[in-house]
Length: 568
Image 1 (tube, one colour):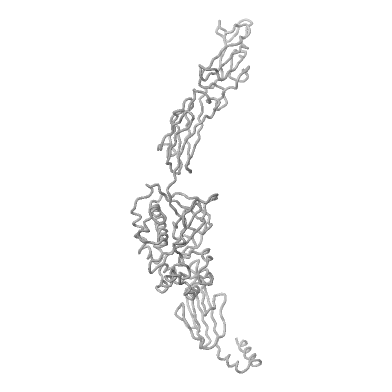
Image 2: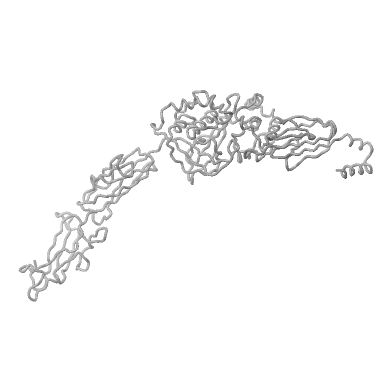
């Protein structure tokens, strides 16, 4: 320091006029040092831990000091000072200011943003008056107040030339956290003109996501409280179901919607904003109040806490939201109208309104539960046996539809026509049902399988295959000597080489369907095998590949006698 002072004096003596030397004697030094995450503003200069301030100013200069952060201690020229947020000082002598800030308590403070979360929703009267003037279109009158608030809260890097917050803030933090003194001046109050409307499902949507969102601020003097409204890729408007979690962002992927069996949540969605039974307009509430309250309803119904009952010691919940919630909870469960609650999960994490790192919220929406219809179509697993055969028919076959896997809780019955088409059962919820055959159709075996069928669209067709009965045959006939009754020929005769024509009739009064010529072996036996077939159609076979005869009529006639015997 001595070298520095000497250097200044020496330079002045060599180069500077006596009048300038006199001016230098009328200046004093200001040194400002910061420790911790806060900021001190000296007029328009920002002083942070990484950049101490050291400069010379005219004696008697008046400095405006603005502090952003929670002060641990403050020293001015070594003397302890009571903490302050804003003051003016007059520089009479060299002045050293040292401020130590408390350690950051949340993610916002780690970023140098200091918001009065404890007083969220409760706005000082003079700031409430400014907000009311915003709504009258008088925003331009308060540019200086906004920039002062931006410095005080540490949000100066997130405002535009007019002192309003830019979308950059919303990409990192929750807009809801701005409902605190000072910071609330930096956001524009949303009006009903910005309301999101439900829309039709976006075509060719691959997976579900958040495609749009908006924030709405409800004014109930002396407080302001905000919440969001999200639009999903299925076109539905969704609400916050977990108030203490972080907000989903536009383009966030979500899970597929899933049903939530929660009567309180169903009521919150049905009787709240955009619900079929919305009671809130009758209270004179504007759209913003309806949206904010419906978010509170949903979160309270699902988790037992809400933004309104956590912020400002529950002032908003206790003074206007709870009475509407209790009224809604006393109403009938809308499930009786077919109305249900859905939810989507949003993977990932962010910073919630309290400045804490948290997982992202589930979003809830309501809708009338979709229902579908179910029809069963029956076919043969082996049409070569049953097709065009009057001994086989699906007519009057019966299946039962059940709600449980063990097929004990009957929902309805299917009766089939001759073509294997059943009646239709309608008004089935989108869920899994179970199908069991009760009465086998004519000529078919009873199917022991219990099928599971998930209804997920308006019309569902389910196909089952029945197994046609067939009599498996190995030994078809055995030839014996007529006189002895033995399967041993007499003399020079032989039982081998006899040929029989076998005809199968589905209807004995009509022509045969298939026929075969079979030849006996040395033992006088004929088996239903290709090795014994002289000519004819393919054999009928069962599911195991065994030859046999379907239900019907068989005619067997010898057409060639073996050597030494007469034709039978």
